[in-house]
Image 1 (tube, rainbow, N blue to C red):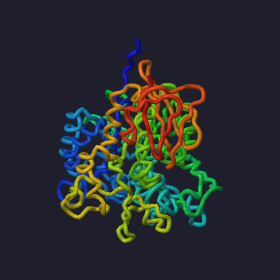
Image 2: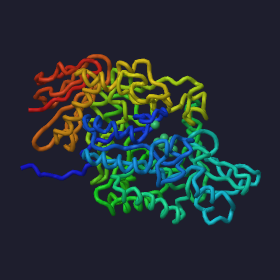
Image 3: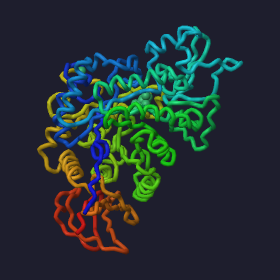
Image 4: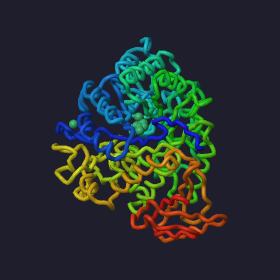
Length: 533
Ligand code: NOJ
Ligand code: MG
């Protein structure tokens, strides 16, 4: 008899990222808000989502759209009030879903009272809460570290005659995590929200949190290409991914574990062998170090299959996998690999082993929306104007229906909507059995019904050319997934084994029910899911 193993909600569930500015506006100011999200929870439930991650909703001067926080324990009035938040949490839980907040521990806003104090004088008790340093003798920056958003990572403070370090904007000074008071303060922030009942955190730039004690220079990146962000000129060997970060993550984990079944997710862009170290010693680190391989890899079957296998092999014992296909910092999947491959990508995301995270609107096949140069809002785009790095195109309002502004707002939306929203929206796609939305919903339903697809084992199937194939299985059931990552037809010719079964789900529903035995032919851009006999 099959052993009944119990899985936690963040292992068997599906996470959906809401970018709150763009999900649903309720008060006509053109910016999404908490009441707006509450009004759309039934949609998320209908879609099959089990956990909602909301990007920052805290008081902020919005230099980086909420990732510059000036008060960690309140709600920005733009998004609502703390009462609205309590209602949101209650409404999420009422629907048997979970709520994950964004925690931004690496840096605060330069308007946060901690920084205002810290910068007020060199002997202020909070001086050491941030990373202050003297200039070199010639007046230049303490070292060569760069800001992710362009230019130097150091900003000169005229009043106190020192530099402070900021990995992102100068309006986002980095906290000094070597200071125990800083650690305490941020762990208290976690407790504040956990006490309220939130189900966990997505931790912003976890691998940045602590820097080399001696502030050594970063080495040059020999592979730098001029179209890349200026930040890529150096390898951030001393400004990120330091050994001490794991002690901090373990402390965060300990706080999380003092509560019942909460989750800690880490935003980490690192190669697999570095990424998996964030599970921690004996899994005392983050539960889910975000796996961005499907975002950063070339869309090529050979590359992907090698990397999936490498990831599966690199996971520590007891480390649970996860997959992400889009977020608010990256071009949307449709704009990266093309609309024709988007359903294949969805099948990959939702049939691999590990918790999937969806980005709002991807379930409609929403595309990046071109933003006229004079309308660009994202500081990353504005600071490096010749490099096309603005993240605005992937942050446009959710497309709900064919009314004005796609039902997102009755006012002027903070970012424009695409011309095709009257066709590409929730209301229209709900009624269309062949739409991307119907496809996503059926796929999610299937994943949640079939233990093999949800939490079952993964086994690679050897393929060549543009095909990617693998098996998901429990002792009771086996599924074969075959994906064609090219536009041309292609045939899977199994060498050592015959796969016999029936197609139960496909990018073209017309194939469902078809028996399979021996060679399996696929159309271009096609994916099939075979239940094996
Ligand atoms: C990562 C966030 O996802 C991104 O949006 C933000 O700009 C940086 N961290 C800085 O907080
Ligand atoms: Mg609003």
